[in-house]
Length: 172
Image 1: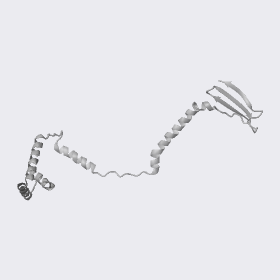
Image 2: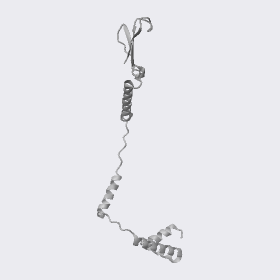
Image 3: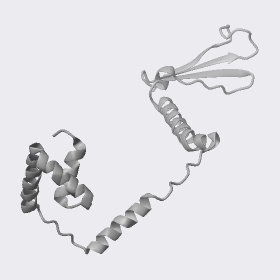
Image 4: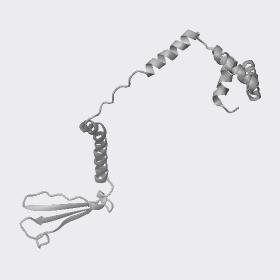
């Protein structure tokens, strides 16, 4: 018996869910078809086996309360979702890129401060200019612990004239 509709009718017949007319049709089928009788016997045996071994499940609350929780959950989930409000590009920029740019700025300032305080500035030294008509350049090398000062006349075209020269060299 491969007819799925007939199999479903046999199951409904066994459960007592058919009308009087359908019940008589199924009984006629059972009288004519030995395969249908075998399937009905198998369904009855399966039902008996399951009925005797079915675990009983007790709820900690009353049946009405349990079903009311399910009903509330269904009502809550069937509510319409909030409409998604689209943000303007400025709001998106302000929310995402401003903090990132602030962090980048602080990172750059910290890196610049680290370079000035130690790192590579010790290798480059420092230069200072003090007077209006006379210029002086001071070079400090922290690694070699030396300070050099050059003095030169501003009115001269070239820095390396007779009037310019090394003023002092001190070792620290």
